[in-house]
Length: 346
Image 1 (cartoon, rainbow, N blue to C red):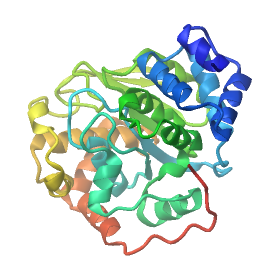
Image 2: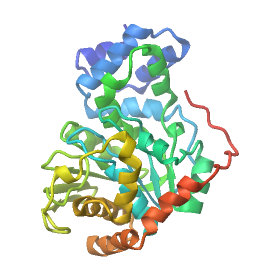
Image 3: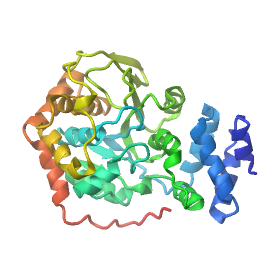
Image 4: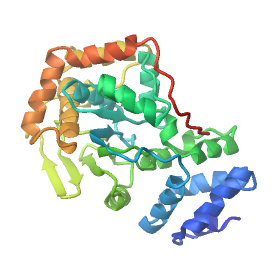
């Protein structure tokens, strides 16, 4: 059994990057084997290791990816949640459209559903919005629309190799681990990242990881309702590099409503419901929730000086139809220009 795996199973720190490099080498040449791959994923899903092990684990994956652009996409924010918690419609994806329509450049990452019925990628597929396939394509899409949805090229190829190695076993049983670390595995040259953390995820460990990231400003959000989104009817905590910000019910938006107004709809009606929310034609609670999360993106990325100004701007993007118009423009795009530089993954 590989040293990295024996350390995890014994709950010992595995903080040497070389140990993880060896594991990925064995995964790549096929000598790790299905049994050890399953044990690795099961161990990480059952209990996330300490910060030293997690940092070495992530660094060993980051160094194997194709390099991101040298320059930062200034003022751009990535919104990606951990999933888990109470089931809702795709609030973070809606907030990405609303923030972008208000002038905040957004690059959204996400995945298919591991712990929910409809992940962000599943919804975008139904909308007819394509994922980008390279950094170059992402940057050009961002320049044209003010928003881009990055494809799997931003994630380490080793995740795809793990999926193939454990096949036909599905990756869904390991969704907790994949959702928890997914926001830290996407390599994008953004200025800021806003990540909602549900009550099913290890907030303390993720806060340690966020503090160790120096390439972008990370906000983690949590609340007493257990959701991975900001909620007007809950007490929210925004964990920033400068400290914690507490947002109580009614502080920024009306506190009425509840999860019944945010429940996911059937896949067959998901697109119509989503577009209605962008138009302000959904429930008032849904509109307020999306705008609250869009405002967080504007403030985190430095586009608005305070929450009240940010809220006024994103609410206007909904009321004027700009948010829905942006979604319709992306849906109507007949093709995405092929990337000039192909990035292999998988």
